Structures are given as structure tokens and as C-alpha cells.
Image (tube, rainbow, N blue to C red):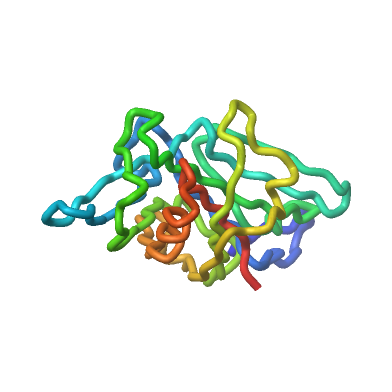
Length: 206
């Protein structure tokens, strides 16, 4: 929740509330807070369980804001904070959607998840920089596909049909802490589809 003071003498503060706006830390040089995908899996014919840790590909992460008044999109990639939700402090109340990309094929120097791996569990960890305008923010986490080429995000990715969806909540008390999200079902679907990247979109839920 944000409180703005009135301009005139004796004015009461204006309290801005809304559906919520969340900032996710995405600094590639700070591994303690960088978005991370942890995958546990088994392989046919091999004993034991393997665990891989994959950091997001920060240059291809991004967010897209839709301005309903101007009917326009603003695309940002490679920023240190990704946004999703509605900016209730802005006159036009733009809605942001955030995108994270985790290469599964080792293309950025990280682990390679074999296509024949049987996914045991998968956890997405993000560090929440801030939660504004709401105590609880409902989230739709979409499994999506978008281009990983430089400047690959485009306005069509804002509302592209998801490959799979799950829901969870972020709370204002999560600000300044890691949030761990069980994405096992989404990771299994990505593995079933044989995609090279695990890509998700954070959308403000109903």
C-alpha cells in the first residue's frame, strides 16, 4: 500500500490501493537473489537422483507493460527488477507481465537437462524486491514460449496462449525474501514438449 500526501494544507493523505504490483530481483551478478530453477530428476538405467541448479538467462528475461489508455505496449529486457501486476500509482494504470527464461540445454553454460530425464521435482526461486498496493497478490504462472534472440520479447507474448498454468499467491510479507514456487507440473510439461528453455510468465491473477 502506498500513501501519498496531499498538496494543500490540511489535505488528508491519499491512500492508493489496487490489485498489486510486484518487483522480482533479476541481477545476474548477484547469485544469492538471481532467479533460479532447481530440478531433481532420474535417468533410465542410472542409479540415484540428479539435482541441477539453473540461473535464468537475464538478458532474455523481461517484462511487458500494457497501457490501456494509450493502447500501447512497453517492452523491457535485461533490467535488474522485473515487474508484474498493475501500477496503481500511474494515471493510466498499466499492467505488467514478467518473463523468465531458464535454458535446459546448457546453451548459456549451465547444466543440461537430458530430454529422457524423468522429472522428480522442480522449484522456481525468486527474490521479491517489493509488493505494492495489496497485501496479497494472486498470480497466474504460465508456461510459455518466446524468442531468446536479442530483443526477442514482442507485444504478442503479453497474451500468448500458455502451454500450462498454475496459481499461487505472493504476500506483502514476502518483500525482501526468497519465494519458492513448486513448478514440478510445469517442468514435466516442458520436458514432455521437448523445449530447449523453461520459460514462464508471471500474470496478475483474478
